[in-house]
Amino acid sequence: MIYKVPTNFQEITLKINVYTHKPTTIRIKVIDAAQQNTTFTDRTRLIDGESSFYVRMPVSSDVVLVYVYNEDNGNLLGGQDSSFIVDSITTELLEKKLEVIDMSNTYVKSFITFATGFCYNAGSLPTGNYQSADKTFVIKYLPIIEDDGKEQTTPARIDIDSGVIEISKKQFLEYTVPSRMAILLHEFSHVYINDNVDDEVEADLNALLIYLGLGYPRIEAFEVFASAFQNSPSELNRMRYDKIKSFIDNFDDSKVYLFE
Image 1: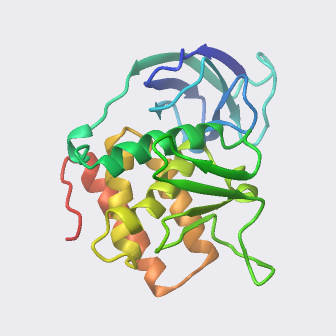
Image 2: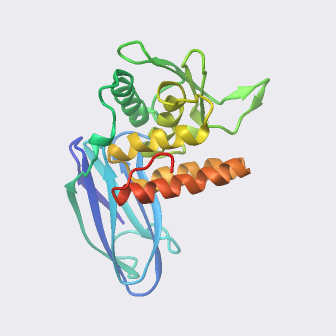
Image 3: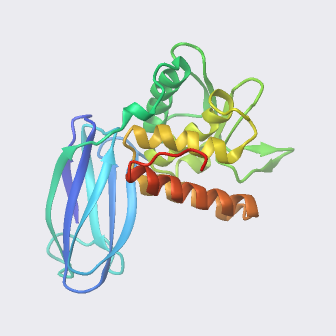
């Protein structure tokens, strides 16, 4: 089923109430109604009875399309799937915690503005170089990231000396808008926030502090980092996975500890 919901470019939370008659894996996707390759969430959940999906949207479009369907049956037309019911789709205020973000840091403010626009539009932008309005930050939007002619698995990386960020368009097209933001904030943190520019865990947590403070959805950050770790399994990445999960859980409990 597909529902058209006006969001008017506002910062909102979509609440999608779903009821199933028995345990059913429900998938929801929220996409921009007008712009290609612009997905705000894409997730599944096993539901038995009544449950609500909350889609946090610090960035939205004028109108979104909300897909709700039984994963086993596929996205059927309204009235063709009796395995679940969409009770309602409503909009609520977006909860943010801006107080945890150091907005006095001009780099942080500038990058948030730059990255927000880039992540929203990345699905329709051509490859090329993009620069922030204040000319502080540069993104090289590449077809793929490669070294010595070999494609790399990383979706993005930053040059420690120049601060230039390279992004693989091939991979970014597959990501939701929030996932793109989590990745960019991680690269930014290496150079502009970290005490140790090479510390991956420090960059993860610094990025998450900004990401979660802005009100972005937890599941998107968790999934994009988990996906990256699966592509490069190691003891470090297993430790990063545990740290990220703990940080997100503590953040929602209002216990923000960076390096416990």
